[in-house]
Image (cartoon, rainbow, N blue to C red; front, side, top):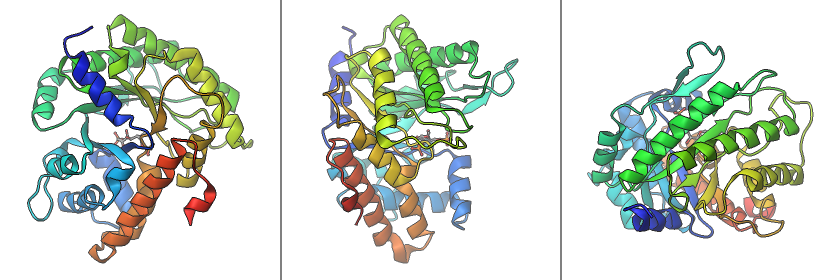
Length: 339
Ligand code: 5MM
């Protein structure tokens, strides 16, 4: 067992607490600004701070949220009253996490594909983030499906970067969330998404093994297996759940501390219903929960729309989504909870 095993396992277990999931609020500047622009919110550091204060101070959030992934800027921000966001989260019992990748860039010589950057200097950055209170981290690789893509090379290059990141995290006693996201863009079938997801996960776990990752001290953040968003065919909840679980059973070792899904652009209720459907079959070898960004925040952001008079309602919308997803993570969600 590696030196930091107990700390890593304790943190990973805390993140996968039954009936809870992870709030992804780590949008980088470009993504956050784009989402603000869609609802007419000005793009400034102060507006990002105000919005994220609304999220971390939402009353009752910790009943359904075990951890929050922050963007670097947010890790150092404070409430209007001067309390560091990190302290607000810790006081509520929410584990602090940090996005450490530097984003996906074009993969040279592989048109249409991307590689995630950010490994240079990561050891030092992790030390600083851990000193600031971060106990887990996240790195997102992005792959897309076309008739020819993803290439084997892009899958392997991204899997290797994910594993190198995970090894540096565990060295720093920080639990790595390993996020290989296969985008929903395109008109591919459910079967094609399943084949690509299975291949990507197989390569990721091969690299994690080669890099000597403690599986009990890491969390996987995958996409669900879905038809492309332009596909003319709609898959049922049961078909998505079955294809997703099947893919994981074939590739994800039982020792992994847990699986926490990204929502990837699904509507909020659909992301909840899919998670719930995955819990209706035979018992699974790993806890299965959510680490949603848009599917937790969309309604709250639209309700707030930059107006402090709407903070309370926006917080209620966030906690309501977290409550529905917390129930789904135990297979106990029902659409009537939406009311
Ligand atoms: C896929 O995005 C992650 C999960 O969010 P969704 O549930 O909305 O799909 C999310 O954590 C993402 O990694 C962050 O928002 C950072 O993304 P950018 O594009 O800003 O690096």
